[in-house]
Length: 291
Image (cartoon, rainbow, N blue to C red; front, side, top):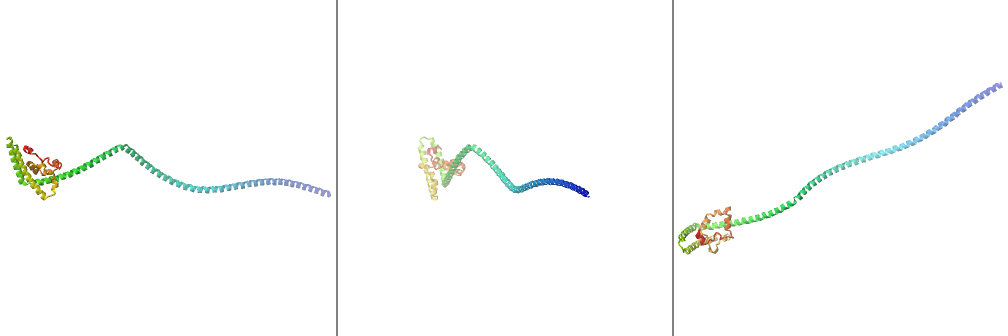
């Protein structure tokens, strides 16, 4: 029994030893597994640490990117504002360039005109000098024309006074002048054929001139009594050395008194100007006899 029990005990002990050996192997395998798991856990922890580091870095990068995005948005606003400002400035520059181009075009035209003006400047100066000379000539001619008009007016007044003077002599005096002139012509024709009759002709002419002088003196005195101011106008007709007009001249002046005021009478009026008062009035007796 004891052997059986001992054998059974040994067998059980062997069985237990086998179980213990199996369990110890399992424990060893489990320990190896745990050690490998620990290694894997350590590796995973290291990987997780690396991942945490990467995540932190990525978060930092995201934060930096967010800051950069905000900066970009602010810069975009500034860029848009600057772009609008530059566009307005460009439009202003374009307007200024257009105005400057127009000014340059006007200046070019003005420069061309100035060049043309400078090219024609000598001709213009000559024309200006010519115009100045012509203006001086026109002014001189105008003043001379005014002086001539004044002289003509004075001559017209003098001729009117002459006409009044000759018309105041009267028809009787004119008839006596015509009769005396006719008798003088007849006597001249008769006495021209007789030699030595020049003294008689001179005496007859002296008597005729005395009669005419007396009649003229009476009319002049009458004219001065009625119009004393006529002395200033009639002063050019005073005769030199007592000479009087011939009867033919008196008759011609009486008949043509109205025609002396026409424009063609300027030449005749020049003969009666105060500068030559006796050119047609102071006639010699020989000239009257020859007529």
